[in-house]
Length: 259
Image 1 (cartoon, rainbow, N blue to C red):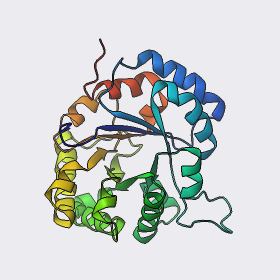
Image 2: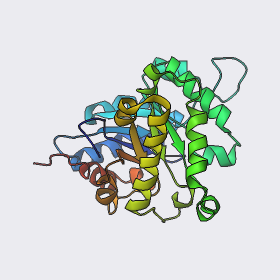
Image 3: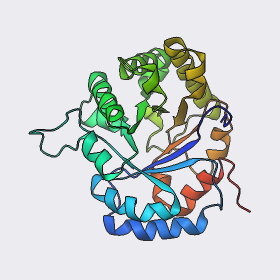
Image 4: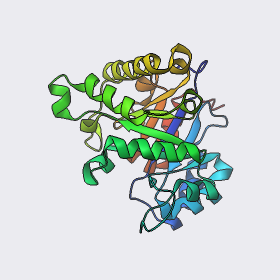
């Protein structure tokens, strides 16, 4: 992490877990573990049906509420979709886009990811843009070229003034929900490359200030080592974000004061 130039973010992704009635007990328990002061933004991206509960109960614990997906459309006959304007209206501040599960299960391509990024920015919501390679791509030495394409596609048409509201999350697909984790050196290598791509696209200062998260099975045990890497500015946390004690340990690993 480099806290001098950019924000540290610990973002949980609950995926399709937890009920709205689980939110208050979760937050109440999390508060008992949290340090008195935090050196990071704490975000929980929850299922759409849990957003209002998280907005209500998370405020006291200084949890910023995020969404897990958004429509690329403004409004209309898109049953089941939720627009960026609707998320903004109720107070959502962050939203995940391009998660590997959305790409794999719903065939969401890079053009759709780009359209969603634009809608979020238009509605003053920070997109957490996920990129990452499969195991086959890594084994064929295609990691960097694949991520280069994903970054450029996701940010196509995004102005410099808008970039500062974006967050990038590197999530190696082979390390999501598998228990496998990229080594700290592997995570640093790719996050450094992502910053180099941003530097080439927008310049040195924007590259230095954008937050890049690691999102491949970060947990309470490996968080400190991963977060010690200079280009890893936080985490996009899956399973560990469902466990208050573990999630709090990851937050503490950012260097929060627990005295």
